Length: 188
Image 1: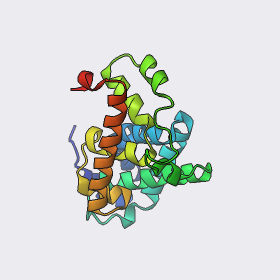
Image 2 (image 1 turned 90 degrees about the vertical axis):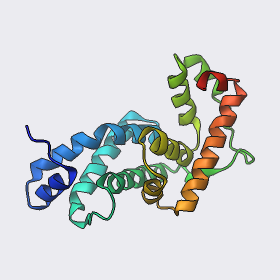
Image 3 (image 1 turned 45 degrees about the vertical axis):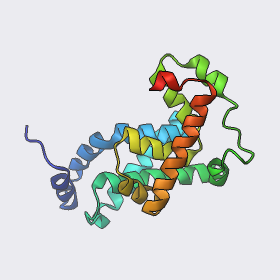
Image 4 (image 1 turned 180 degrees about the vertical axis):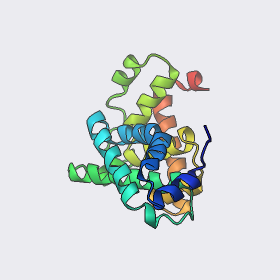
């Protein structure tokens, strides 16, 4: 079986071979679902958002110019779909972006997270889920999905400098939570 490149698949879909879009779905469904589940914190909402994201990608594939990688373009759709769902649920993204110095309590669920974790990796993912959405997303995109800061800035629609600052602040928030439990030695 011949392995087709992402570019070949996109061109095929643009030429009218609609069934080839399933190849793109297979390539990105797991990582996109993981990102959505972490952002929305609900499996059903994440499944619906994933379907919406693929539908939007399919409907707008003709506008994909190839200036960036398809994954970057698609993750931007996924990210925006999640933000739209959060906003429609009347959750304020601004509240999630607030710093530790404000009224947002990052530590309220720490005992529960620590007691439910089976290993260091599970614990780390559970801590990341407790971070504000944007902080969790930037850590996931950078460390788990191996995206560059340039790609992250495109996905999150922020400047490269802002993406660097957000990653730095996210690392600091994560470090603070890990230090609170003296768990950093396990992570190193």
